[in-house]
Amino acid sequence: MSVFTRGYREAILNELAKCDDVNRLMQGMTTRTHFVLTHTHDESPRPLYLNGPYTADAMNVLVAFIQLESWELEETYGMDQTDVAGVLTQLYGCHVSETPLAKPVEIDLYLNWEEWCGVADQVSALQVFQNERLREVLQKYIDDFNKSVEDPV
Image (cartoon, rainbow, N blue to C red; front, side):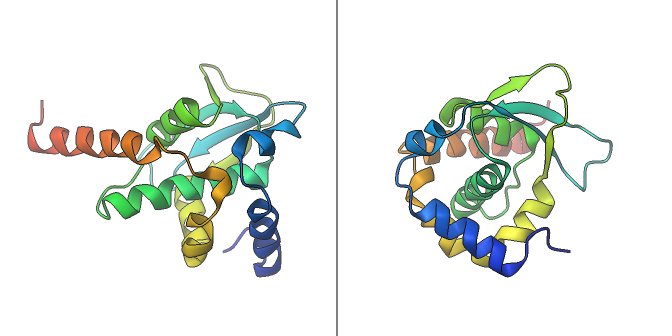
């Protein structure tokens, strides 16, 4: 079931398309929003708390953008919360919290993927989230994963 209606999803994408720089997008945020990354298919819950300078809508699209870029590099690799949080902290001004945060916005990676993959071309085309280091960082996660599969400890 979709969290967003088609019209609302399009409105979010249209608003983000107006901004061409992630720093400009963050300028409007006076407080950091609390988030928790989860995954529907975790065998046991592994919530990962972080805060970031984005609205809930912008963060949802940013997470989708990251997952879609990863999929473009390697279709068989699925990111987990730790990977997504790593990218968000390295490139997008977010900070992981070791302790649960008050009233976080939940972003389930599986539901996020399902929500946004239908408009993947629009999400991937957003200039606001483009980062020259993103593919390099994602490729390292993919390579590390592939190495762990080839050479299990």
